[in-house]
Length: 194
Image 1 (tube, rainbow, N blue to C red):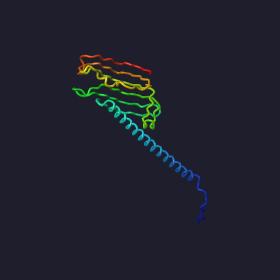
Image 2 (cartoon, rainbow, N blue to C red):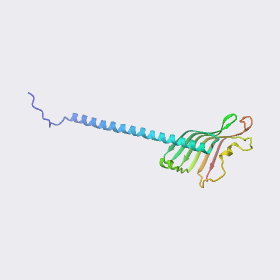
Image 3 (spheres, helix red, strand yellow):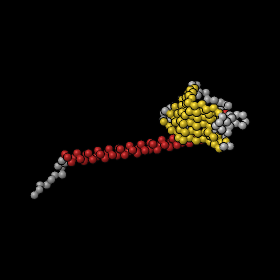
Image 4 (tube, one colour):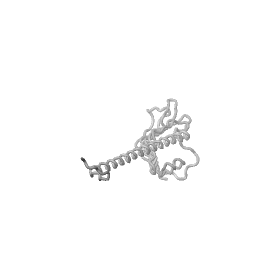
């Protein structure tokens, strides 16, 4: 006959380590799962902010230049540091179709940006760096230049940010876009401190 085993008898050491090891493993698994869900939520929020930022930039430029076709590939907010705008294109409708006036690979606006400030329209731009800008100039039939429409006479901001422009190409050509006549300047760099 086997003697009655007491319920209060201690669990063998090997078994207690296994049970506590499982509990620790489950806790670690839950923490990892919560971390992954948190990261996915963060990236989803940032993606929405970037999409709204891109839409806002495009709509503002379209309101400013209604006679032009405006497109932006993507805008990104890096909180506390900068706003990056990739793939800006401003084109003008002509008799031959859309013709690029400005095409910029990347614009980086540096400043202490945050989501709350952007929501209230606060844009503390300290400096702007323009990379790979292609600017195309041509005379219009009325004697003006196509680029004149971008410069408005009126009030200018009191404080302008530092501007560093790195042109890939500036093309000055004929009204019809014929490539046989014109001037092309490339690999230019300009820096303006205000």
